[in-house]
Structures are given as C-alpha cells and as structure tokens.
Length: 252
Ligand code: 6PG
Image (cartoon, rainbow, N blue to C red; front, top):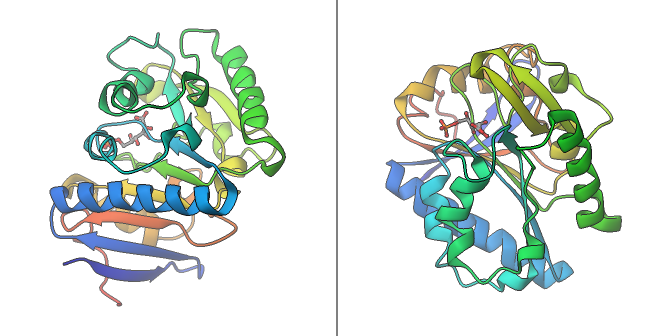
C-alpha cells in the first residue's frame, strides 16, 4: 500500500509525494512509473526523452526497468549529472546506468547521450548543452528528469553555494565541488524546471531530516539546492520510502 501526500512549504510551493512501505516497493513503483511515462510520451509524441539520475538509489530501479515492455528505439537517454571521471571509472554515473540498464536493452547507441566526464569540465558542459539542444530539437523539453537528494540537500550536481544553483540561462554547468573533491557536470534549474515531469527518488532514514527541510522548511535554494527545482508544468513528484518520509507531516 502506498500513501499520497500533498505538501505545501511555508512559501506556498507545493510538492506531491508518494510513500511506499519499503525500499523494494519503491523500486518496483519507480520502475513502473518511468515505463508509464515512456509509453505515454511515445503514444503522444512518438519518442520519450529522459534524464537519468546518478547515485545509489536509482540503480535497482534501472535494473527493474530493463525488463519493462518498452520500444527502446523510441527512448532517448540523457544524464542529469556526471562526475568528471572516465566512462569506465567506478564513480561514473554513465557506467552505473550502463551496467544496470543500457547494456540490457535494445536501445540504439545514438539514443544514449552521456556527459563526457573525461574531458575538460567546461568544454564537456558546453558540448553537452549542444547535445541536449540537438537531441531535444524544437521541443527543447525533457519528458522526465529523475533526481536524487544528497544528505546536505544537493540534487544532480547542484551543491550548496554553487553558482550553478542560481543559473538562469545555460542548461549545463561545470563546477568544482569541494565536498566531492572533484569537478562535476550538471543540468541546471532552467532545463530541469522546463521538463514535463520531474521525479525525485529518495530512500532511507538518513534522508528524513534533509527531506523535511527541503519540502517543509523555509525557502533557501543556495543552502538546499533541491529547492531550486520548481517545475513549471506541475509540482515535482517525490517517490519515497517510509523511512525517508518519516519526518513529513501527514496531510493526505
Ligand atoms: C550523483 C547524483 C546525486 C545523487 C544524490 C543522492 O551523481 O551522486 O546525481 O545528486 O542523486 O547524491 O545519492 P544517493 O542516491 O546515493 O543517496
């Protein structure tokens, strides 16, 4: 059984959350959610464009998604962020997605656009903005952006205090992240907030406090970058397990 919550922050901004009893239920539901969005977009527009999240939480979701009934020739995969490492590095988000999903599905290689973490960061960010503009074409919007939430409130590679958090023009930015001790490349709020749908996947008790601050606390996106995500079309959807949602007020 899942539970739907509509949460409103002190400044009136809304978020929709669905809470699943445990991580396994979250994984199954998140994979089904992505497949539904994909089939919906393919029927409506003939293609589905998705930006994958990095980190540990989405990996089992990608594994489950690999067995979804989908016409993968009509799916176009982008990335929300990348660590500035080669594509075969254990820290590479591309490598994680490749092993968990891309190697297991019949997706044309041209439909997968990764961030070139091995290149000089600023050049890689510019190259990826070009790839996004070409890949999205006139539409210029992603159908779905998957995001995670870091312990200190970062999302994608939008970390507290970075200029990329308040970016208003560029779609992709490279930043040196002190906390990670390395450069990262990230989609920025303008392109994320233009997406038809944004979904956060958050699991575990370790995220309960930061999740409460992001969703119910005062608005301070430079300190809590996940708060910079305010999709224009509809409130972001937060797919949570009960442990992560433990500190959220229950207003069905
Ligand atoms: C990354 C991610 C990052 C991630 C959060 C949560 O490259 O690390 O894109 O934003 O989503 O750090 O990570 P976990 O899912 O591992 O908790």
